[in-house]
Length: 138
Ligand code: SF4
Image (cartoon, rainbow, N blue to C red; front, top):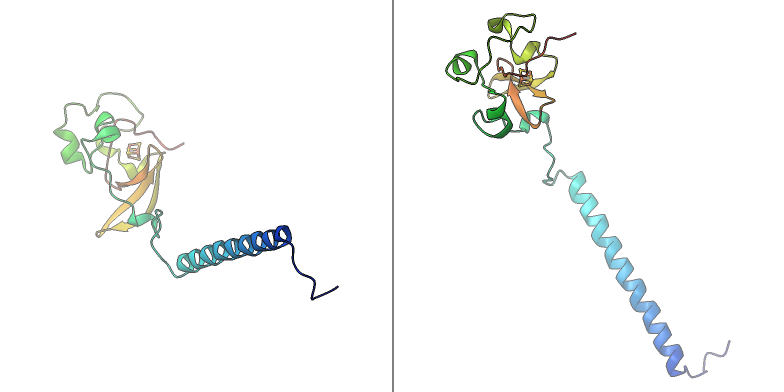
């Protein structure tokens, strides 16, 4: 190879495009690597670190309102939408989220036991909560 050979304009431009393209790819790889390192160090993401970090469902809003969900029987008693009459094989006053087939305990939040309900996927329900969709465990 002749090192003294002059580069044609086309060769020079091709070379520059290759060098520039390689630099852009390298910068993208560095950015991606930095992002991965931040995640490993525990930087904030949209997903809570623990399930107990999820918010508690708000009675009277959206699905909670439609299902007459309440954190306690005392509150459910005051709601005219609460269905105590439907026979579900267990007396109404013995039904709680913690013995419902849709419930899975995840831990304590603010000193009270809470769990996940498959009808409220992005929030927590109270262990002593109740709603009209309560179902007896099989
Ligand atoms: S479906 Fe069951 S676990 Fe879910 S809110 Fe209603 S009573 Fe609680």
